[in-house]
Length: 151
Length: 485
Image 1 (tube, chains in turn orange, blue):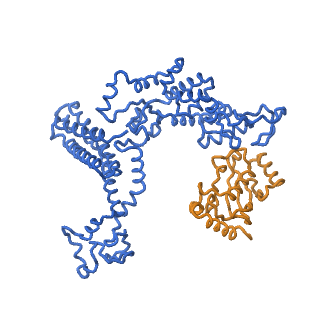
Image 2: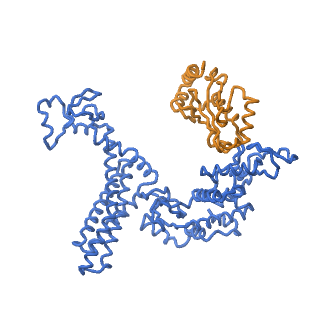
Image 3: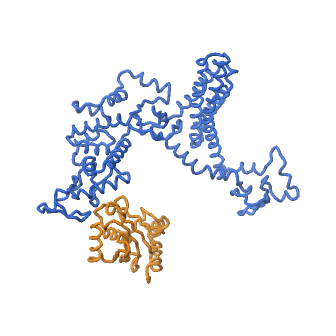
């Protein structure tokens, strides 16, 4: 395998030295492009108190291509589907090589605070989020308790 | 459009091709008759040119040159403007006169706000993408001022081009929408195959953004059809002979319009299999009309919804069956009275809708198949003519009219095939009645023609040519009344 680009080395160092509050990202022992991520549910969101596991992979042409990120912990959210895939513009067409792992993870955390049911990935969740927000939030809290706590 | 522009700036010459087109369509003071006449005679009349890649490049370059001369900008930037404005020089020039800065910002040439140059005093800069620190002269930026090192620009472009993106590549900075123009991209592309790929993709984008140009949809054909009128008319590629609708690029579909034919084809693709299955394997419950699929051998059915007992064969009530079970396998003039009562029902059941669809679909399919068979007909004709000529019955030239007849037959059948989707989506009313009347007339004449061609030895040439004329008249009459493009 080719040597790790300087950019990835620097990003990893900085993630370790100055971690983002509420987010931990640790590279895998055997693959420096694969990160084990834990995002804490933001305060005042239905995900508060939960610890959400994600996986993040830097593809060969990173940072020219976006990192691949996926939720491993199940989560009830209109922009995240059953397989944990995330609908977020900066992971797709709005990706810029100037963005970093930390900015991506911050955006994901922000997505938990501000779900966007108008641009859904999980259709049934988005539907409920639009017609009956309080019930959707109840479900999200329930799932957070069930899947994202005490693990 | 171009002519307005020419008035304003007489020093700018339009290309020859443009002038021809402009004269043809915009000057309505003289020779009016010549222009209107063909359309009255032939509702499918359509003017277009078939251009090679080189001809298209020349045509586009002329526009680029016009604009870059006028605005005193590089051809590379002119291309960005033209691509974003449907290649209308006049529109760009008008916008430029109104508000040059807004034009450049909206076209993503200039940023909404320019980045202030950071620490220009330092000789070394840190590239935000690869984090490597290098000398200033190793860095480049677009008009937005976001500086990145050359290597990063190169890999950015390569990744984008490999995804098929060319005219839409933007600056690497976050949320910066400024587009990388051709010169800037080519300057950073080191591999010749990448440059070729890039130029090929931009060319495709340019043609697609040009309202008067269409790529020929024929396989491996690189021709471009040009017409000043964007209409759903028949265009035929001169090189590969592919026939298609100029507006939507699908198979030519008069009298049906582009949207309707798309709806129809999608419906056929989605529904045909299901529809055929439903029609072949299910029946409606005679009492509650729910759709039932038979899943066992026994013909004594009980509807799972209303619990009605009936016979699968005749749809009659099972109670009256009893020992006379085999009654229903006997042919009767009016075998299923139960069936009749279904039809009387006013509510249009799902099966009614299905029946309607299948009615049109079967005819559409049938004509499509007939059309394919016409190829064989022509082969047979050729053999028959050979025999005739050998037997001393006329010369090869004498029999040529049969080919003309076969070609006309194919043309008529083609139009007839495309009348079915049109009728399917038509609302019931007097117009639909008229349409279906004309459709039936056309169909009858086509069958007559087909019959006469296949038996040409027994009919004389005059009769056949008369029949050709009638069929073609029916076809054009229908198109004149219903082709609305």
